[in-house]
Each structure stands twice: as structure tokens, then as C-alpha cells.
Length: 452
Image (cartoon, helix red, strand yellow):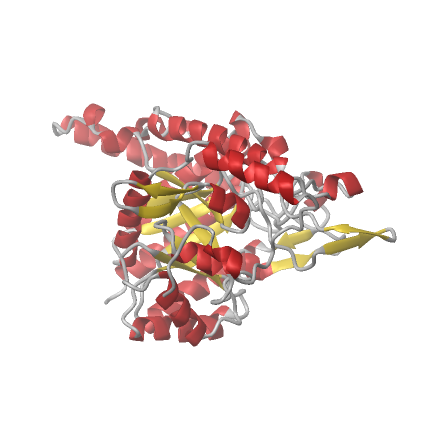
């Protein structure tokens, strides 16, 4: 392949990038970002690749979740802590069910850019640039808010740095201690059926810890019980931002993306000749690739050749987002082609993006049952092809929102508007996320018990 530099993407067709009216201001913001410290460091990336390699071998499970699009207005301890807490709960449920480690990755501390189907939107006879996430412009429908602003790149960096600081403290500072498992449940979840079920699981964990202590195992000194590894991810959509935070590892003389541990290609940006694929082929980070129902086996194999020519373990996460009505037909040919090519990427299920609909009262929403149906179809396809269903990728928040219909809370069209807060796509709330974890745990248990 051609030699690679962080700026190589600029010679390729670049989709989904904003049109900045002031090129000089954009260049100044990029220079400022390039002079700031990296948010992520090479050792963390290498560690995540080791963990994902275990997933690819069928020895662990990937849990990746978080916001559709983070908001500058929601930066604070409570939103970050609530999302972290629910991911911890889900991971405990899945670990207990699958009897294997769960790799925890958040869509957080950088998920500020969103792809759009159109460059503009029209309301009341007025046409303005589409909202592309807080890293680009504001969601308010006004000419001033929708103007792409390079200063937002620096704000995104600052918010990501603050969020990462809090996440590292939560992961390593005692919040994630298994001895505190009873304290992880949010108040609005606690009295729900899934909250009660989690409390029962927490009781069993507490009893197990007491048993180990009684047997002479020094649980107080075991680091695995007091802290967790937690990684960040986002779609590598805004290439000006990604390039500015690309750093050279002096020890290995390899480039890495300094904005997140894992970066992914979206369904709209995975063209093999495109700028986004060109950028991601050159960085050391694990790379995710979203695959919708139109993905063809040849496309996937070509992407693997470009992004992972050396077939390195832990490098690639293929994220299937087919839709509940298409997964049974669309996924098996991809699994078969990748398997027959001798590849062993991590296969992950995104049951959210293929199941988005509009409610009778105009809200963008997703049905809990269709989400679960796609997860089941994902596991069934892997069972059919003899491959490993390695993970789950979903949009969620730990807050008590009403954006997805169904679940034990029975959110309906009539109640969607009560606490609908997403500026883009609908998210599972904390209760629905935990409910999904228990349902997937049952699927994992069945898969673990099935004869191989």
C-alpha cells in the first residue's frame, strides 16, 4: 500500500465532514489540538487489543455502550456516573451468566459527531445546515447555532478530558469494587423487576466473596475485585479532530489515535477508497466497522485486507447492525466469508440502528422487543455458522429517559414525550439496559450449555 501519514486521508473522498466557512479558523483550531496532550496513551491501546484478542478467541465478551451523541450541556458527574454504573451492572450480569470476562467499552468521552443523511434540513420554509453533533454545531434550529464552528473542536477535547478523568477515577478509585455491588443500582431501577433481580445477584456475589474470604482467599488485596478496566470509543467521523490528536509512539514508531481507545467506521463512511478508511488503516488502535444489511462479503473482505493486512489479533471489531427483520438472511453470508478466509475478528451485535422507527406522534424511537429479536438472530446466525458471537454494542444512558418503547416499563407512544432528551437517536434507559442484560444472559447461558 501507499505510505501513510496522519494527513493521508485528505487525498481521498471525504464524506460526512462539515463545510467550515473559515478555513483559517479551522486550521488554527487543529494546530491548537495538535499541541495538547493525547487523551489516550499507547499502553492502554495495547492492553485493549489484548483483551479484544481474547474475545476473538471466544474467551471473553465485549460490552460496548453509551450515548448516541454526547452533549456539551450534559457534562457533569451525575450523567457520566449513571452511564458507567449501568455498564458495570450489565457486565456483572453477563460475567455471571457466561462465566467469562467482559471487556467494558463506553461510547463516551468523544462521541460528539453524528453522520446525517442530508447536509441540510428544512422547517417552516427555512433551510439550514443539519445538526452534526456538538463538535460541529448546535442542535437549536437557528442560523447562528447551525453554523459549523471550529472552536467546538477544542470544547470537545476539554469535555472528553474531563469525562476521562472522572471515568478513570470511577474505574480505579473504589466505585467499581465488587464489595459495593449493592450500591450500583439507581433509585428509579431499584424497585423494578430487573432491579430486584440484580439485588438477588448481588446477594450471591456477596456470599461468594464471603465464602472465598472464609477459605483463606484475601479478597481485600485482590485488585480484580476493587477496580475495573474501562475503555472509551467513538465513531472516527470528524477527521480534522482525529488527525490533530494522532500521535507517534516513540518506542514502537507507530501512529495511534489519541482521542479514544477504539475508533469505528460507520455504515456511511466505510467505502474502501474513502478518507475514513484511509485514516484508520494507519493508526494502531482497535478499529470497529459497522456493517448494515447491504454489506457484501467481498466488501468486508476488502476492508479487512486494508485495515488488518497482517491479521493481528484484537485489531478488528465487525459490528453487525442489520435490523431484526434482516439479520437472519444478511448476516450468515458475511460470517461464512470471513470464517472461510481464515479471519477471526470480534463479531459484535448493534441491535439499535437497524430498528429505528417513527412513533405515531412523531418521535424517533426503537422497540425493545425488536432490539432483543435482533440479538437473538445474531446469536442464532453464529450458531448456524459455527462462529463466536463476541459482543453487544448499544445506545443507552443511565438516566430515566423515555425514548425506546416497551420493556418492563411499558414505554408507549403516549409516554415517549415525558422524558425524551436525546438530540439524535433514542437510547435505552438504565432500567431497559439492565433488563436487556438479563435477557442476553439467558441467551449466553444457553449457548454455553449447548454441545460444541
